[in-house]
Amino acid sequence: QVQLVESGGGLVQPGGSLRLSCAASGSIFSINYMGWYRQAPGKERKLVATITSGGDTNYADSVKGRFTISRDNAKNTVYLQMNSLKPEDTAVYYCNARGFERDFRSFASWGQGTQVTVSS
Image: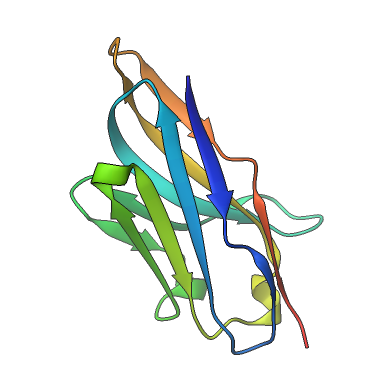
């Protein structure tokens, strides 16, 4: 099994910044894809940003220019730098990773989620 542990959420004022981290552990052979999703109360979980092992990134239109996703392949860790935060960014943020375990079985794992609240 591959486990994901997120950290870095919290309460921040509008215009502020937060950095989320997500570390993967377990029987990992390779992680091809890592991403961040978010779910606001009463709404569906939506993609925020993704990054491949080669560094290709993709962002939701609502966060382009404000959020930056990055990863440290050696540490099996993905980051989300969030700047110019808005109240509408308030949500539980989930990390997702997909790849292969050491026995070459594929995996797709989710973290437990971390709350981000943007409020004055």
